[in-house]
Image (tube, rainbow, N blue to C red; front, side, top):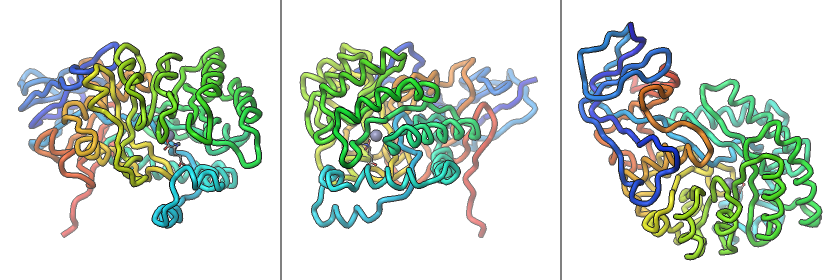
Amino acid sequence: MNDLIITNIKSLILPKKSEHALKGKEMDELTIIDDAMIVIKDGKMVYRGPKTEGYQASETIDAHDKIVSPALIEPHTHVVHGGSREHEMTLKRQGMDYLSILEKGGGILNTVESTRQASFDELYNKAATNITRMIQHGVLTVESKSGYGLDRDNELKQLKVSRKLEDNFPILMRHTFLGPHAIPKGKDSDVFLDEMIDLLDEAKDYADFADIFTETGVFSVEQSKKYMEAAKDKGFKVKIHADEIDPLGGLELAIDQGAISADHLVAASEAGKQQLAESDTVAVLLPGTTFYLGKNDFADARGMIDNGGAVALATDYNPGSCVTDNLQMIMAIAALKLKMTPNEIWNAVTVNAAHAIDADRGTLEVGDNANLVIWDAPNHEYIPYHYGVNHAYQVFADGKLIFERPGLMI
Ligand SMILES: N=CN[C@@H](CCC(=O)O)C(=O)O
Ligand SMILES: [Zn+2]
């Protein structure tokens, strides 16, 4: 007897399981099975394919002609933080840009203050609200960065909160130490970077990856190289916030260092984009950030994919440069502004997002954990098309229904 059958699935969306992230033309390939059915036993996929009579189960769920996909994957968030920065919208309206706000002690440094002041429980409860919202939007795998402590105790506090979230929610998380996220006021950047390098040993108990913000007025390419090499020596896989605003060569550094991902890449060079195709580095693009910063030039996803590179998408949820926990919204921005096809977008928020954070997720093959979403949508193109609302209808973690969108009470 099988545990659960989900039947009457209009279309089943199946990204390809692969040893490496999907690159170039592969990103436009997606298997779609119409009139489908899923069988789950002990939380794992036993069958997925055309409807058949061959299976029995103690429970059957009728998908009522809705579509089903693997649960989405968030490969870049700053979900653990104190405070909020709505006042920055006024500053931006008055013409101050992101780096000028940071230079004046606002931006990331504002959130550092709020995060330092917040207790462990306050940080946990706040982040739990965002994680809940992400799950409600169809996400069951989340990467979470520190980077708002900028000192030993507060960086570790953030990472411990991140770990507790993973313990208490039915999700898989990856935890990233982002000590070099900004330079504390009055500190010398080299001295501070050395402090963060010294902290890597302790951070290793809680974090899977080490990350750095390589940007004008933050850390240079040379400093980033030093940090990444130190982190790799200590057993970390490395990530980088690269070429978000200025073209410093962060993508080339990431590739050179064998980074698992290079994130942002709005201002990445042509040379970097060419090299991406030959590398195992995944480009994690964050178009919600470009939108939220009010910019018109988006990352060149088309160039990266057409050159043969691997692209993933994330919200970059954080309190300053992208305040949304709705990855479906990012799928819409990717369609409109990154000119990605629906198939590329689905692969970018499932398999490729999984590869960007070293997670074996994002597919629905036999033997996979049954992490999936029933979407209230007629086809897979509909979700990027009808933007700004939640299309997730039912979310299943390891075959268990954990969220169902309520309907009207009239
Ligand atoms: N750009 C650097 N870090 C974050 C933003 C952090 C913040 O503004 O609080 C990002 O990925 O966009
Ligand atoms: Zn970030």
